[in-house]
Length: 163
Image (cartoon, rainbow, N blue to C red; front, side):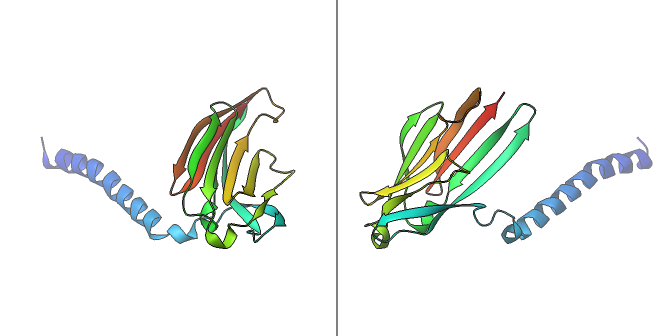
């Protein structure tokens, strides 16, 4: 094999590696500039009694596709609780998480209610916050909770809706 052919093969292998490394280092160098560094949805808490947070933040991401969309929601419970656990689930349409409230919010009784986001709800009672994703009242032919877990002590749910 001549030197020009070897050089061409070497450049063909090396250039994509250099490009990938440059992209990766640029992406890692700017995490605070992410448009989702803060929750992009705020649910207002309607307090009945006690000391309650004013809002509960959600990171809500939507990935549309032909005939539907995949939704990912993460509740920012770390503002009022340190831990979260999955407590109830209907694998298709309903999931609930519970978070013991910190002492400064332990007497909170209230809930979020949003006409814009009726499938997301947080209730505060009994020294706990209950985050719920409830797809049962969505008027669409196909919705489904596809994944649920606790990530970084926060409720994490992925769900889809399709025609």
